[in-house]
Image 1 (tube, rainbow, N blue to C red):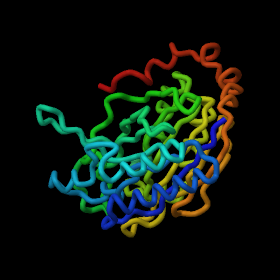
Image 2: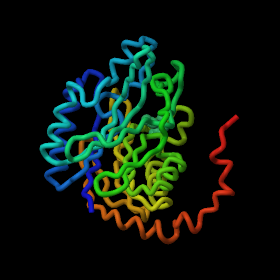
Image 3: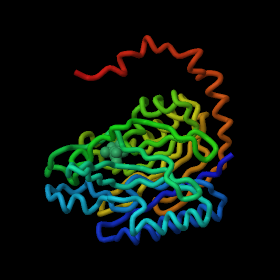
Image 4: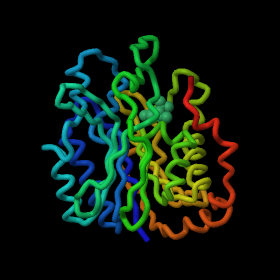
Length: 304
Ligand code: CDV
């Protein structure tokens, strides 16, 4: 059994400091702890505004949004408070890696921190949406492909919190392969942070379906792999642009077991029985017995 909090955040504005964000993360952590949480899940890029909405070629400006160490000077007190409370957390942030030869790598990253404050897992976003170049015709940019390179490690799982835990970030949640790769590794709890603007410029007829698609992909990912899924938004109106909230926790049955009802800072809590996963993993989705991989080869082939 594990009690999990989906710690949704409302907007973080461009002017807000890392310290402002950490104040809010600590408040959410304390709220979760007071309601019995052992694990609190924060959104994608939880320390800053969703900066890919502004295009810049100025590397210093770009990298001002990134962390070079975790915990760092501003985030150390989040780790300390979590260890004091005995509550673990999952945190999304922009990660800058500078190698000894000077090579720079920028990732959209999420970490899993155990109840003693130790980092047990790191995931770097694989599916990077949006565009590489400035597209001034849009009402706002979604230049994730300019700011981030895809994570090289892929989808892993970790033995943590008494179960098998995996992570994914935002656009990853729309791809069945994300859940399946972790499902094949026995995942029981998938933690996903997201920032999803309600306006999707390449095809605005999808705007009205943002909430439906959000539920559709996480519910089916949970059901088809016999796992819990925790989806956590940074929602509300940030820099004048509205993003989806609707953070929710899904059971292996595909049902919603807890959901945020606001578009701001709010923790949705659920007590999860990880053994419940086996009802699905050992019956209709008994992979060893029923999967037919020889017919699936084309989905894992490299594109030419
Ligand atoms: N942060 C994201 O990955 N956002 C995408 C948007 C661009 C559609 C998403 O899949 O929600």
